[in-house]
Image (cartoon, rainbow over all chains, first blue to last red; front, side, top):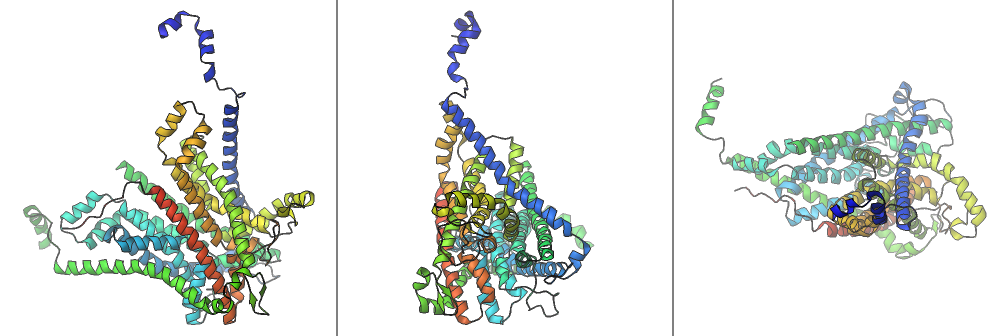
Length: 307
Length: 333
């Protein structure tokens, strides 16, 4: 066939014969295609605008207030100049620490149960369902729970109540990522250990845990970043305080998130400026944790694919 | 010293494999039951959340019954409480937010998967979008107050001025209101929708797309008629999960929606949501009745989110059920 066509003058006939393959914008199909592509790109770029707008505002309005005093001084009272967020940073660290102490051991061991100890059981299916429901639990309801379970019981607002609320939100993240990380460990390694007569506990601690550690850490970091940024559960579990932590920690305590919320409604310029500075510090903490977690999981993913 | 020199010999003579000692078996049993107990703890926490909130809400449920859900008065002085405006506000803000967030989210998912941009750029872009989810909601609230509201106010008031007879534009946008809250909500939903939709679209067999191109379909004919229908369950699931997040989202709404106890058809009017009500009223609640009433509202919110999340989970599970089962459990001999 091709022999016969080459004998004719090639250019004109081929162009006419294949004209239906040309992409002409005059045809509605092609025009629609181009418009949709443009629209899709436009929408996608628009989706990235808020992130850059937030980051720009944080750098501009928050960056203006970054100084040593910001980290060492107490929040400014209404109408006062200066001041910092020292007690809020300490309070945020304390409450996230309490939440981690509660949620990390339960989350990791629960994740081992789901992935290794009894993964096909009805209990595991139920736990997975429960963890998914906790993932979707509105953060304010974690606060309501901690209020009924801790504040009403102890009779006071405290970092402990705040920590319980945050732990409830962090637990499912840690548990489900641990399960996934442990499941992705190659079964040959596990079988080798079992063949040596290792008990399941030894397999878990000497084989699975070290191998899955980067994945587990990713989950912990993501959970920490979620916990550090949460505000709603702290509003009525540890409320706020204008002072440093006292020797008795079972008292209302400041946190970065609640400070931002309180000062965002303030009519005073100085307090608004401090709210922006606190946001910058909070976002830097949260993004560092998130990006650290992502980098960790990416590194394991590549090293695994190479192996 | 003696043991260390003997070590290689024993390894040569016999393997290191040996049955576990009695102590190791006991530790093993203990460890297994510990993880089992902790796993059960998760289930009991879920039950406990429902039970504790329910118990605290019980006095208010007995006192107000279903009246609480259909009444729109909130008057602590007269001890009259109703959360209809909050339910309405929760639903309206979620529907607007999820609609906008879903359109953008699915567009982003298509943009990232259909080879519009080089692979590395798509990876960068995906990470940028996923960072949207990492920004704390209180920061979005602050940003909404200082950036979104001033930015959209002129356009909104122009709409009100010229088309004020249309119910959604019937009031001016003073400062806080439904639309800025819903817009910020859309931004917060977008990463959820785009991440899950992206996975669903990427999971569609590329042979289908190639077959469609082979039949002469254009890129968008392939996307709209082949790829999206194949990935529809994942996309539906992502939208439902996004809806679940929207219903429970608290801080951005508490800061932007205005906490005003009214039912207005206008999207520029201040409104309130269940979560915002809890955030604003709970810190001030003093009497047991106040707390009981708020617990009742919390229970309604809990019921709504559980319902939506179970529905989302069901859709997602149905979608991925055909996927091959993950690693099987190894049973030690």
